[in-house]
Image (cartoon, rainbow, N blue to C red):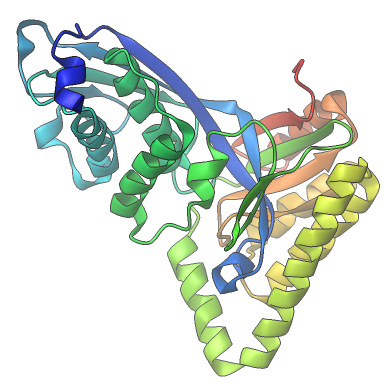
Length: 325
């Protein structure tokens, strides 16, 4: 049975789906050089997509979002990954004769290292499938998200595409991914510096530093990779204090790669002064967000308040390994 046969008698309906942001616990930049990384879901930063069939079977699509409202074929370049999410999913199911209105509501900020484009792609592709009465299997869903991410970023690692659809930490390396099951609930705060991240510039700067001094950068990468392994062990053991120390060490190494900033360092210091067990920049750096480890969910709320007072423009708290929150 072909995809078109499958849908020849299917009446489109309103479809909905959601995803969430992600953050990197350990491994940013080093992952570019083959080191492992650990990705955390940010469950409180939600993206919701609603896909509604346009009456009359029109084939054109429209969008309502914070970036563009109107026909998809008139959307600016920034919306092309979302356009791809719609068209690639419809093509996967062989649907060519039905138009849809797509609404995207996102609490994941752009250019902050939280996986905004991947989260939108994850929600929209799943919502289109739902509108067709279908459910995407995990690997097909991942492939569609990656198709959108290639439009957004050129050569995505797949790290964001995995992080925005998981509810557990993920160990990510070239050989594949593995879930990491925390031995005890761990509470984190993500704080937005209010400064756009400059991942491309930061990656290029690290590359230039590597070209000048490969032994130095390779040594830092190896140490970050070792910290990723240590972080996985402490997560599994439920040893939050050791995990915090690992995060602090990772921030120092990233600063040595010159990917931190005055704003990020200020928020990291504020989190530590507030009693966080550990804090570091997260993502590409030179802007974007910091990640702080709290003792529990209540402590995370308190640290989030301190970070907003210290200049963070937004905060999110997330407790991993606690299904009740």
